[in-house]
Length: 297
Image 1 (tube, rainbow, N blue to C red):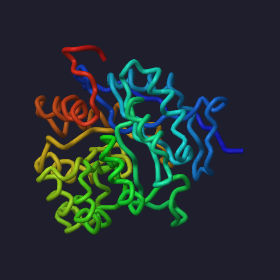
Image 2 (cartoon, rainbow, N blue to C red):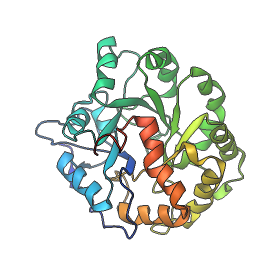
Image 3 (cartoon, rainbow, N blue to C red):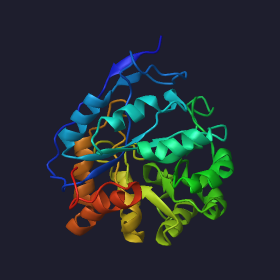
């Protein structure tokens, strides 16, 4: 039986997020009596159903969120779509699919809040692909159908892998969103050729980057070794940046604190106009949240 663990608590940040702020990377799991995981998991599954996810967002002072399909659910998006349906427009979703996905499913998902599909080239600690994940090879085959339905591609890979694949991926005609600060080689620094390739793509608007720290830096909770990469992304193109917590932090012990990371983002970014753009305007543009002057949330 798969182990279930409590979801981590979120401390209230010092920073007061602006109305419409979005956590662009988090996950829901469960309720497990209704939505059991269908794939073998390499980690204990957090008890993170929609009610606990909503409480975590509330603790952060974040009104909107983007749910990313966890690998243990594979291509069964039921738990995630259930959470979106209960959110009154506060949540959007990123699903997992390969080329076997039906036309009916791809046509149905966008109306239910799915804005993209995730493709992963990072590997589990065993060196194998995470069970339930889908690689870049499937993205190339799915791209025409994704374009038809207005779906973007969310990618998780190392900066070195991006440097290798972005020239071809950029030809697919899809928005490309890079997880986890583009997963740089931290000891090599932001001047490393692989991260510079990411920055070049960011500068010309070929990619979006999520400013998510906890899987990049090793010196939590200050994450000082991630600061140069954060600053380089801000300098390159703030119009294509997003912020995400990665709550509830599977495979990370001790669990990070989303509130503290939100404070770091605000402290490091410093400029209120940039904070507004990254937390509110950019996710509203990419994920299609309702305009604040039209309806809440």
